[in-house]
Every structure is written in structure tokens, then in C-alpha cells.
Length: 358
Ligand SMILES: O=C(O)C(=O)C[C@]1(C(=O)O)C=C[C@@H](O)C=C1
Image (cartoon, rainbow, N blue to C red; front, side, top):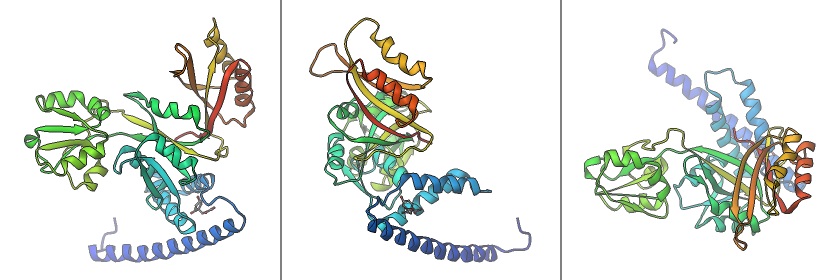
């Protein structure tokens, strides 16, 4: 702490630094615009996730503190999001409405300058990307407490979109209302999943209050914004969007509550050296098949991180498997193991190789 400086002097110093920052940020934005013009002339993609990763990694390496790496990561995400928006708008469709966790996950991944387009359903997100109306789509795929979002997995059966990224979001549920007072609450609205995830807290703190399922946490927040006797379980983002007060924060029963989202695109992602691959396939129903389908991966030391099965809708007792593994499909052990598995599959589809979430 400098000893003899007054508050005014220190703030004056901050003002001077801010002026330099604004100048530098605009200088950076002008260079990014030049890059954009160059790329347009060469018919190259505007959004380059591998370059963004490089920038983040370089910034982390040169950071000497006191700012933590996470803080710099968020700042540079916004800087690049803003620079990119000068080159070309980045359209991203997500499972809406606004203020849901999908919205938060999309903001976390693409920054606030991206053009985020809420959609009514998971199929609608796929459709926007398939038709080229959005470059990317963001859909939830699993929650650590509630399990997989089967609707998303089912969509991959008929879609040729590729997974190009995953987003892991810490989920915190807040109890929100107009008055901010627990004793005013006569009804609680939310989506069934957050209600299930806060069941113990609700039983203890609001034992006789009816719980009402609605289509999303955002719909709950909207209803509650017009009813002084109701509360919504929703995110902090919903509180600010619908002008609600926090009754209690973080009321989820499980402390480690995370949701995984997938980013889908028409084009596959480039290898980064720290990737994972998702595939789906179905096999004949015969003895030893479960063992045989995993053995090619074990033999080559390919680490499997998840296996999921879904019934084939058109045939009783037949299953489609979803498998996640470490590595990129361009790496020999991964490619060879998948090829071997394919030789005894009825069908197999590579859903994408993409960087592991941070
Ligand atoms: O390097 C580029 O290709 C840029 O367009 C610049 C930039 C950046 O701001 O650093 C912006 C968007 C891209 O996704 C990657 C990087």
C-alpha cells in the first residue's frame, strides 16, 4: 500500500490507466477489423476458436498477478467477443427463453457481444444451425444430479451436426420474489429439475407451500414478477432481467451441481492436443457384445469417460450407445479403435472431436 497517497490521488492514477486501456482496446479492435477484412478476402472463417484458445493460453502464461487467471480469462473472452463482433456478427442459437441456464452457458462461452438467439426447443436449436441461420447452437446434455437430457441425445440420431465444444456450468439456484421476504411466499414456481434439485431445502424452509412446475426457470421468474405472493427458483440472471429480489441464494441440495452443454456446428473442430471424442452406435444383440465393443479401446489405452444407452425407438429391446473418450479422431489410437468397433456395428456415427472443457 503506498503510504502518502490520498484516495483522490489513487483514483486519479486509475483514471489515467483506464484512459490508456481504452486507447489500447480500440487499437486492438482496429487490428482485429483488419484481420476480419483479410479473412473475408480469403474466404476464411471469422470465428477461430483455436486462435482464441491460443490468446487465452498466452495471457495465462504471461500473467504475473495479482489478477487470477480466471479473471483474465473472462476479460479476454469479452475483448475477443467485442473484436469479433466488429468483423462479423456471431449468431448463436440456444435453448431459450432468456435468463435460463442455457443462456448463461452461451454467454460464458461466446461473450456478451455475440448475437444470442433464444429458441423454443432443443430441435429448434438444431434446425437453426442446420439451416445456417446460426453458426452455432448450445444445448444441455447432462446434469450431475438429474442425469442425461435424453432429448438432446435423441436429436443426434437424425442430425449430422458436429459437437465442437462442451461447456460445464456450475448451477446455483436462487429463490427470488418481488418482496425478497420468505414469509410472503404462498407458492413456488420453477422447472421440475430445479424443484427436484432443491427438494430438501424447500421441505425444511417452505414445508406447506405448493410447488408449481412450469416450462423453464425464466417463465417462473416472469410469472413471479407480477405476483407479490409467489417465488421462483431461478438464476441470478433471471433476478436482474425480471427485477426480482433474492430471498435466499444457492438453495440447491447438492453442492456440486453442474450441467454440461454441447456446442453444435455444421463444421468439425480442429485438434487442440487436449480433446475428447463422442460417438454413437448400435450393435447386434448377441452374447459378449458389450465386452467386445469396449475392448478395442482398452487394448489401445484409449480412456473412456462416459457410456450411455438409449432404446431404439422403432425396435423394442435394441439400444443405441453413446460413448465419450479422450483424444481426437485424427489421432491413430482413437481412429483405429473406432474403425474396429465399426466393423461389428449396425451403424456408427462420430458426433465430434472437441476440446475438453477447462
Ligand atoms: O485472429 C483472428 O482471426 C481474429 O479474428 C482476432 C480475434 C481476437 O480478437 O483476437 C477475434 C476473433 C477470432 O475468433 C479470433 C481472434
